[in-house]
Length: 265
Image (cartoon, rainbow, N blue to C red; front, side, top):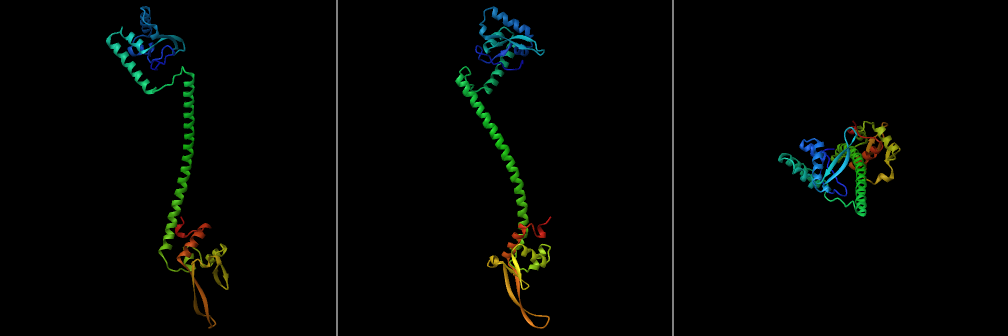
């Protein structure tokens, strides 16, 4: 308590020190400080600078002490030797500097309207601060989620770029057997997978794109003259996938959770 700054009531509005604080600063016994103050009051010193109040000591017992205004502190210090006087003045200045730093513009609490406005303002500021803190927590959670999602997207993009780069670097036509190898599948299994996905169908042993994909430039077909095992000549359709077609297959297969071996862990 000796180190606490005292706020006086209606009579003592200025910041000062208590007799306990003065006893601590000067090293004097508190009872002796109380005696010195009583002597001053008996000599006719203005008692408005010395307020008699009670406090509880460490044992919880009620004890008397004085609350001194800054002027009261100086009056008391004037009766002490220069060393003790300097200690009181220095401590008083220290307390007042702290008070000026902490209380820049206190409202007039004697005015109910001004006090109510001050309390309302403080309540609003605390509420706004609480809302801002809650909003900040929510934003942090959102950011954490977005960061996780972004990291996942970046990883996917790395995979995408790896295989897509290969596709985009090569403008050559590729057979279904070559593409199937990229997925660790046989040409037969790969064709069946595309059929299940509604991309192509089989007609007379020939895989043909559904009409919605025919004019997209996904495949290039040409006829090849062959000779059957019975020696008869024949013509078959040979279909190869274009660069655009391979990119299309990559994206559609990925939707089904089927990715090239290059992108697998």
